[in-house]
Image 1 (cartoon, rainbow, N blue to C red):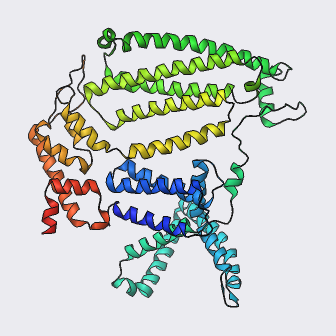
Image 2: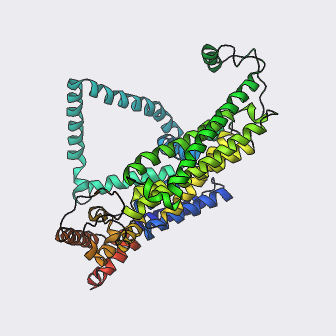
Image 3: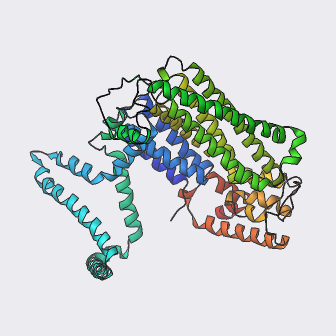
Length: 504
């Protein structure tokens, strides 16, 4: 019944400490990096305590578990799957470990052995029972009655235990033990690491065997006939790629020219932005999708032997030119979003557009490395995955709600104030909203041809809502104990004098 705060940091310290003392876990550099990353994420939950910091915490936790138990894996995707495997296989891992336990000359193997013949059939029967109960209402009714009777039997038999012990707390404890077991007990199969070992990071030239056939070859033959099976198949692919990249460069050159004239130049600024909202949401989404699609096209043409074709320098030059033009396109996205923020203020989605544009820049940079250094798609996913995780930790260290509220209210002379949006932000913003409560009313935008983006209420309405938010926070804060402690809640309580009241 507590909020996420100091309790997560304490739990993480416990899990990391237990893992450090686990002899089966190698204390490699990779282990230390992801242990430190998870500890940093746990500290951010206490300091920042935002939804993004909590998301970063759980992702870092999963990656730490995956990497610590299976250090042969190389990507965060494999680490994620390995951690999930840890949880799914808890019963099997526990039974295997118990079968190896010996007390003197006695061991548990004769007792554990029959259980393994029951667990899997029981799980399969349970799954199909749920399916059949959904397919047949009569069967589902009888099943429900059966479970109710079983529940009543256990309650009547063991109900006395929970007269002084909360059943919810007991189940929470059992769930915690189950999760912790999955974190600490290594699954006895490293199947994910073995599968990942087949993926290489550097491209190698493959000789085509005309005698070998596959489903993919049969599909290609059906649609393209002998076009790519001829001796000049690689040259044909080169010509197709050359024509495609040349045409795409000309097309994007026209688009970038229009953007530079109407969007980048100061004199075109007031002419182009007739409707900021439609231009941002429709135009920007299309541009970002085109950038992602552009990276996919480049990856397609440079997926195999075309990387080693002796005439591919021209094709690489065209591909790099297209990457540069896509980078210019991303700058246009930044400018569009900047204009929109200038006139209508900050929101999470507008910040998200900037972040996604930044990710596109990183994606283009890594695609360039892939083409220039002849890397594989696995290398691309591996590098980008690590970068995304690092950026998640970096962005989690920023208190976005407070940043948004403070920016919009301090820039109220230039941007429109959407009081409904500001009052929907987290409790961390209450000190800022209270400080600028006189500005909590609707103000129109200074943008040309602006359209109303809010349904304004009276100033008294927003003052009342703010007071209700403060009272709700006060009631919630006084009902929690030190386990839910976070710096942001403490800071908000300090602003409203709640800490002094509690201490007294």
